[in-house]
Image 1: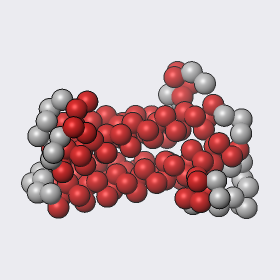
Image 2: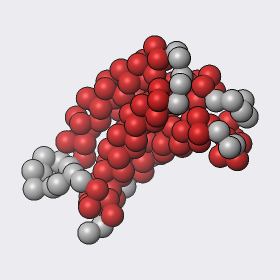
Image 3: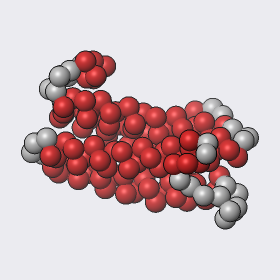
Image 4: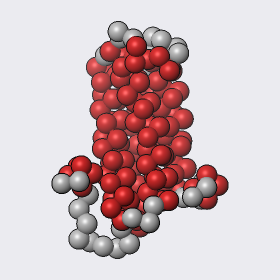
Length: 145
């Protein structure tokens, strides 16, 4: 599936917006302004910012993978993985706040973006299962148990 056709999928566009906002916040809160080297830092805040960035980048990749796959199992695993990453990003916001980020309005903006994304995500997730109510959406599905 091409990038252009993915742009017509609302949840993918929102995932890209979430990614951009996460990049801006990671850049703002980190001590190390080279975002590619955050993982090398000794700062907890930099590690949280790196994790935030990593998960935010993986979300649109997983949506694209699900959209391009004809396999229901792959689609379910991608959606389950996105669900885990959404929860992680919320946790990273909490972690940054506990680490002393004073500009909580930025974290609250990201939390609002996540809530908005989650609504689109739930609609998209229903659409990829093609109405099958027998599918469960949990971490065990992602892990293949």
